[in-house]
Amino acid sequence: IACPCVLTISTAVTFATVLDAMAKKRIIVKGGPQLEALGSVKTIVLDKTGTLTQGEFQLDHLVVMGERKM
Image (cartoon, rainbow, N blue to C red):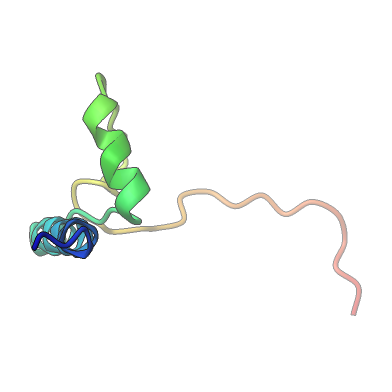
């Protein structure tokens, strides 16, 4: 007797396996819907700040406007 529950469970296991494999390669995807959306991506744009290539975030410029009241 076939059980449709197997299909439901296998889909969740597949998403978890793919997300784990991507995380091991230092690629973080928020979840299943975002993972599915990657299938229709035609163009990827990367920045040149090093945040995607090196993962090092830094503050380059800060502008303070107004007066600080204590």
